[in-house]
Amino acid sequence: MKRKISIIGSTGSIGTQALEAIEKLRDKFEIIALAGGHNKELLAKQAEKFKPRYTCLGEEGLEKICSDKENDIILVACSGKIGLKPTLTAIRNGIDIALANKETLVMAGDIVMAEAEKYGVNIIPVDSEHCAIHQCIKNISQVDKLIITASGGPFLKKSVEDMKCATVEQALAHPRWNMGKKITVDSATLMNKGLEIIEAHHLFGFDYDDIDVVIHPQSIVHSAIEYKDGSVIAQIGLPSMHIPIQYAITYPERFEGIKSKSFSFADIARLDFEKPDYEKFPTLKLAYEMGKLGGTATVCLNAANEEAVFAFLDGKIKLYDIYKITKKMCDEHKVSKNPTIDEIFAVDKEVREKTQELIKTERKL
Image (tube, rainbow, N blue to C red; front, side):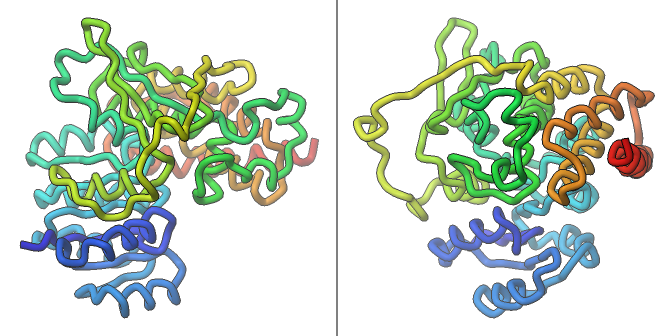
């Protein structure tokens, strides 16, 4: 039988690559629905090619898609907070999730994972790092530590002064991955890795002190786990998002699908690793701190950072201002430990408004 799937965010980077993977596996999938952001033309082309039962543009229609119990799995590939409510709707309808939306767990990880357990739903991570960990773990009770790798982004070998005067173009010049602008800037500051730490905490139930980050410029080792006996198991492969996307939507089976090419240890030749520089990349340390506080601390972190990144992309602030603004908002935030979904969205809205005002003030100084 074909696996029935819907894709939320089909016109984005992950969504389009997912459809490329599905095209190679047309006999394995039936597409129930495609939901795009603002690219009406691309969504129309996708609908013509893949013949979903229905499509939607924007947020309207997402609840309907995620309430359709004919779905075996829903790929949540949209960016931003709009992914949270549809994900919860799908979970409450007993539909498995292939999750590529960071905000879902960063904003409401405790709620989402509790609901998934309650309704017996699998959440399969799409991020290459979390997907790697998912593939490595056989018996989670025997795992001692998670090790998340980071490429280090475009400023790994640059100085703090270089980062302070960096242009948007320099920040978007990622050496390994082709991603959307927001996530690429997050990779340049290592905030992306900070958000992944928070995600890993919720996905796998590990304390923050047991989640390490290591810089690995080649992006060949996607992440690893250390067992209690000292054995380390890593998942490796060429840097291609097609592989983790396909793994997530076909789990627990594996098919040939898209492969960039066969892996060759000899061609790779060397793998380098180093500790992250927390002075150079202070957003990473901030993410650890907010994760340990829990509750709405991570909501504040995510909202403030996102607004600051948008301001940087618009040329309103400098790259290093992203950290300064986000840190100030986090320092001033009064944390609510056990928020409801409505409270989470209220905090998100409030923080974004305050961050926007702070950015305006900063620009006047």
